[in-house]
Length: 95
Image 1: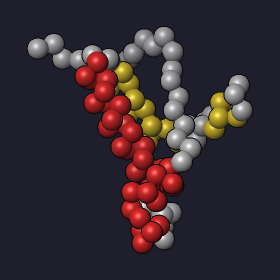
Image 2: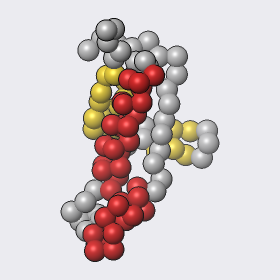
Image 3: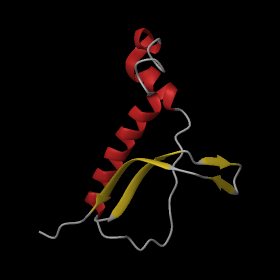
């Protein structure tokens, strides 16, 4: 994996993962949220897949990294440390 030279970093914080999962699995499955189903992980996985697909369609090369640990504090601060949960390199392959 070669290093990327990034101009900036985009941080997406999903704030309604539990609600999204409730809508997807219905009232019966709602009892399982947090016990069997990890809503944050499920929504994050779907979001990463959608981002990867969209990036490839637009010819965007990117590094998508799923991390655990950072917390947004207001609008001006990001607290660390982080633990990488998933990472994908999106590359454009010339046909």
